[in-house]
Length: 325
Image (cartoon, rainbow, N blue to C red):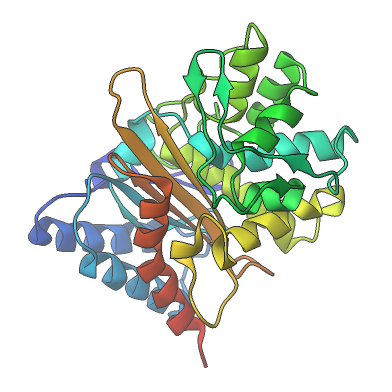
């Protein structure tokens, strides 16, 4: 059951969001058994067992929705709780603004972005023939790197992304693992990251709205890597990105995921596919923000990123209560 030191979950164990409550209960029991069977430690300690039970109880109480919900342990990479695991492992979709941190990290690490430079945002934005208007409040008229993440400013990210070549953008996403198998589920799909052919395609791909498609499982793993960097204090020049992820939940576009008593870092994403004009939404983030222990991903097949952040809130709240003395 192990490959490259990572626990794996067979696709037969996957539940689908939207099943009847009886199926959800059975899926919860299966997930518990799979966690105990595949956890890196031979004998899970009582705290680990209690955490899995707490998260699965929170999941069981949540209303059914089409998509996927995943909770992963940052350190071990074990899936602690899930709904729609089969969807998460095999469905490809555009990740929307959840890609923005990886774009800015590539720029900051290469020294091609001054994180304090502020860029004017008029909120209306057209790239090629695609409208990509910003949806943050109108009073947010200028953003720097940190604020661009917090408020998910399309204008800022699309402008600075052009400082990367098409190949550099693709490589930044590949380093994040967005077209690599996670080895968490048998027979999982892998993302696709086409090479942009012009400026418009590069900008739209940087915004997660053209070309690139990933599985929710790959996106979860990409954010687990960010959480590990934060946990190990390997942030250096990329500090504004990590601060922006915290601001996003505290007061920005992911505020629906905010909970009192614990710092949360996260990002929303909304996009549509070529097959349907309806939008789908993501929220992916980690807690506690200062030293992450779990990563949470919500994928809504129909909805917006802000809706996904709201779905994450009960899970994060359950985790906060679990940690409280």
